[in-house]
Length: 468
Ligand SMILES: *Cc1c(COP(=O)(O)O)cnc(C)c1O
Image (cartoon, rainbow, N blue to C red; front, side):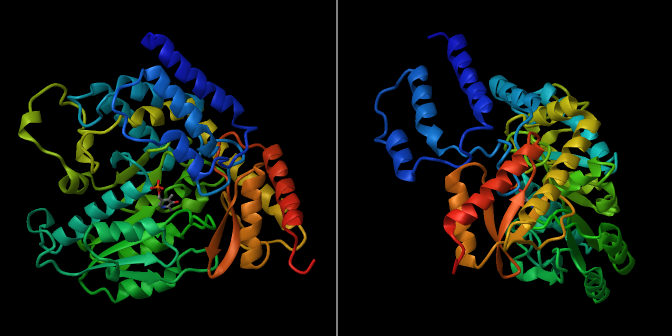
């Protein structure tokens, strides 16, 4: 079979999958055992034609796919892919460009430069900030905390690049008690250790108590401090009061020994909407930001951004310098490898560029607003079901619903996932087991919300209320 027709068949499969997304059961159908049977077996000793390999993969994997990119997937914060973003990602794979530096792919470097400029404007972040295209929010948090650690220790006269952490003064990490768990992992990975984290009190929506933060920074003396703020709590959507928090930190600390990071994996996208922008006012006062592309911007998986208001610090911590690369090819564009933790990598900037070009600033604002409206519609619909109660302040795209005791909640979620109209998960929020709804897909409509609320009502009846 010629390559042409082989790839055409793959594209047909992708198109058929996308065409069926809205109506296929959202959850996976196949058991792990069935998937192992279909896809496992001994190490192949002989080769097989590409066509047969791909047919087997497509047939074997289908039952284990979750329609996370469909309109009624409301688990975790996972967007879909816009048409242009998906197409651009397919091109990135087809071209197999290495976005490592401008020598390996001038097109990748320039597309990332352009997309970075668009991103900063959309998010209201400083135009001079540096941007690294990373695998996701975890990658961005890890990269940002690496930069932060080096910068605050440099402010104390300690050069981490040369000395590592040997002999370094302590670094405090102040982060809200409802921070994302990727912050803890980043703190572990950068060698500060989770004992360095001091949890700042958080209110009912998981938003930090700025007075508690101010009290803590006031005791800082001359010490090195990293403050991690959050825009968009994964459970509630709550956004820290970034303006007040940044002001409190700046007032009490030495600038060269202090770093403010904002984890805004999905929440910073509020800035792209005139209607929601006020929620992230003050974000630009921070030193670095984590933002995801593969959540609310609806580009395919494997795309986040680490953005830094102090490009020299960013490059000092992460830069890649190798003699064999210098003086070759394009040098009048920034080197992407100076702002990420990877060297060779895929050209993930193409999908971001394409999504922004396709939607435009107006389309992205509309995407954010539609998801927030859908979350409010969920809150109204689910909150009206007998025995259910919305427990968070729905300010963004997240809804938490108390439906019953933990056993009932888990049974309801299992039934919902089995029933297949939509996919919602359970979470434990402040000690309580709750139904969690997240709306981040560009194709979700009011009708999808209504069908999903009806499915929850049916599943509540199917599971049967305790005692009824
Ligand atoms: C999703 C999320 C992350 C992690 O992002 P990944 O892209 O899954 O690595 C970090 N912080 C927040 C607030 C998030 O919502």
